Image 1 (cartoon, helix red, strand yellow):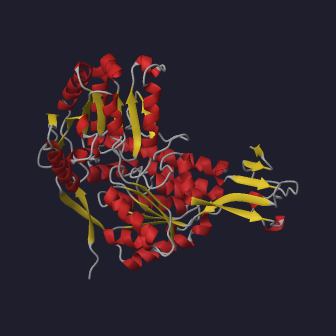
Image 2: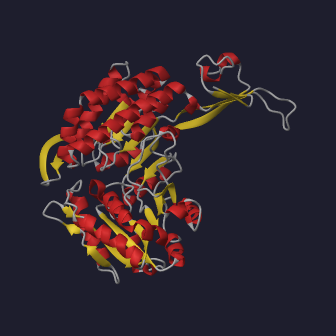
Image 3: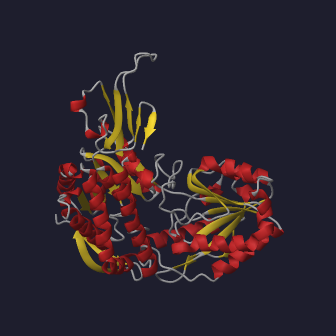
Length: 509
């Protein structure tokens, strides 16, 4: 049987543009993984790794015009958004190059023998080593930053792990181009091109997670798809770590005082956040707890005006469009749900932004309205109007894990008066990032960033954004009583590599 072709599709029309690849067979997946496994030695030298990452950033920037053109044709995200996302991707590559050179991620700890301790301490030397080949499953909504050259790939390469990427079907042509750019960068440093494998096809993704030489996996996508891969990773004869980002509602709580003080501004800010990128951000605010009464009415009116002025947009593919149209229609039919601005089909290939309102009491107890507590991908949010703090607590107690949770406070509450501190404490168990008087869309690439959260937001406690993402692809190992001549250079007493470390309890920089 001939391999199925992989087509580039224009989401603005739904028409196939060109064939860019074929779906990988089991044999081809095996070859890609084995080539990646064989390339491990080329990533041993941290200097080479850092130079490779910087060259990759340079090469991506040099190919920017072509990459953005192809990305826009396959995703309809627009040149401005895509140019910015590519810049973020290049920044991330260079940031990880710096992390590799610094070496703190190796977490070197050395303890000399201490016979006076109880029990006695032998000579112990600990650091972290790369896991091995990493499988990366690309996301649809960030064709640069969470795809072939995205955070999981870059963090894995920085850790010293070769990567095999399962391309997302929404941007296969771009995936092929970016892979070629990264391989070209690798070749400039004598790193084999097998260090970055690329495969297409659903079956290839299943083969990849089960391959015995794959040591870990990273995924960004739906709860259904991510959970299936998570279960497959755990069911292997040798289970592997699976770092999946699956879904998030990203709740927002607006206090009555905040709504009274600046309800119009909050409504406008919410509209901008929930419609950004046609609502296709993983941190889109999907549930907003707003007060009933006049203060909340001002917020809803402002939201209505802003969303009504939002143009219809194109989603990443027609399957997502169909799911959005069906999903919002099903939610709108629930009892006591109203649509101040009706979301749904905007045209044959577009969708219109909108939002739904519902009494918060409907969400504080189990029932058919639980559908409103599930993520709906696209430009829609649910505003739950609460009567008192008891209803707020009731809804929050029923929420699953999230990437973010936000609270909008008044000036006095922000200064420590009222329920401000209490609400921050209540939201903290729900999410990996808690915001005060901001909006969750926009995930800065910074050392202190954490992009993750309790399940189903993610399947692990690690982050996929920021420098500490490198920790996903490492494991600690300790050498005990090992002669100096047999130790890796990272663990020798004289520190020939000049690494930051903790030496006999003292932090050395």
